[in-house]
Image (cartoon, rainbow, N blue to C red):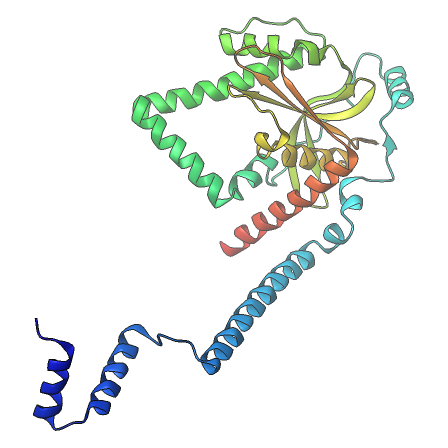
Length: 322
């Protein structure tokens, strides 16, 4: 192997260049290939200045984005309570319930809002799902297709939807005093068993599987239930699961969905009452006791703000297609 000094001696002799010129050229070539090996004060100051500019630009972009959101639904973002809780309505309480049932002894529901050509809560949440959630859902779908095949997966998906619908129908029948049918799905019967202790504490149903509309914000949805839970008026969101949900966060978008329905209930012109607390109830397909997550008024307002962000994102997506 030719040594470095031999190579240098060859270069200086052959090209008639001194050793300093050779080193200068080698340093120049090395810098072009790998950059500065040691950072000088000058280059360090330049790098830090550039980094500060990048951070400043990112903060400015973030602030501009938040300002755009605020400008699109200014009343909502500046005053989240007013768009979620209509203070002109009565509080749903025991006294109001007695008045309601005295006036309408045979009918618990006030007026059903007609269907309108505006987006649903479910559609909005699905459209604005995070990239991480979309990727997780897509990975789950691919793994299930590998196990069941395309046709088998489609059948499985239809059965999941049918079981969810059957569970809601059974709860609805119970709350409205109708005869309960035995579902041909074992999982639905297990979910019913899972809900046993919860349903004993649910009373005085006002709305069950009814459409509600938030006119000011232009969205609609089917609220699962508005009733009393341990004597407290609540909006209830029923969920079915085969896996344990030990925390509210594990229910993903359920509390956001609940807040959206609560806001619609409180602003729907068909109903003259308001509700400020909620429940997310998870029933289990193996029959073990359901989890009940109670949301205070403040928690509902916190999730309402998140819902506002999703609603704005949906409107931005829709406007980009026009």
